[in-house]
Length: 357
Image (tube, rainbow, N blue to C red; front, side, top):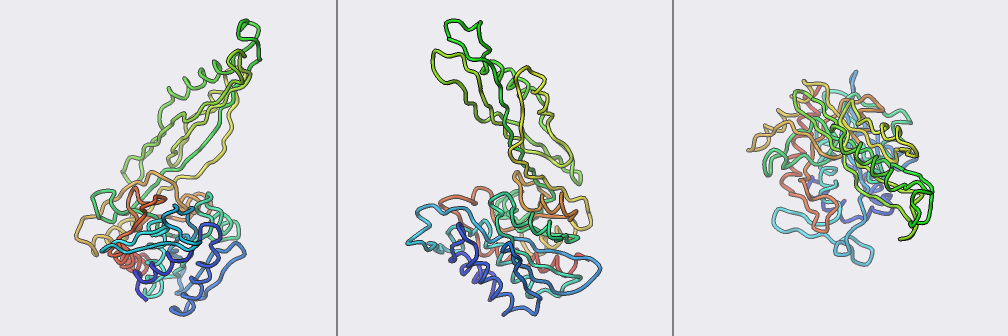
């Protein structure tokens, strides 16, 4: 079965509430089409291993998806359709197209070392499956994560992402003392304290770094504010949410807001960024991508987090991100993937598996 056909099959299986069915199909497919050792761990992650060597390369995907749009669902089954080269439906771009390409590349490659195929669960819930696998000892030396890297340098070109940003979501809480609005001097206005904190956030420099001579710039934005209980009451509490797109090795010093009276700061989510520090591995991947397409691929930086961040930060894995999805496709009502690019990614993954070591 080729990558395009497997993509259609995987996309047809609902996996937004329970990814078990598509996990079942992956195990069955791997046992039928490969001679690999195939297993499913207690978390629902699917692993397959073949080849041997002192170091290991993992082809990494995930088989859970976000909830479909109403137009992508019919009587609890996924609706998908082809229009020319493109396949439309939930999970086509994120990321069953690249997952199918990884499975077929894993099957067909003559691996240069130990080759691992893994499909995680819970990626869309903050990398639950990946983190659990790492806690259980999963730590490949190298990994290619199949999230989207197509269309970054130029339309239709599949690039090699050598880094991606992370996300740190946090909450600033300002507390004061309630009072009647006609006598504001008898209270402490929490909104005013929160605005003083926002001024600090606004003046902080964006985090930035360099990865293999490519600049990676983060961002820092106050995104929500909530406070007050009535038009005639001095508010005693106000909260501000902050979205920080983090970069490898640094964070914005948001703790400075706690120098203000009555202000505290708490991190709610911290998805780690990723940086590839191995230029040779990156060059091997770029050469593989260059060989199989007419366009000229480049090293690029992805704006959002993937499981590569967990692998890099917690398992010490050297990671790259290469995949068929294009910017703006994932999580949309019109999500789609080019089946020709899925086949291209299969060729890239196979080439890397045969040459990386």
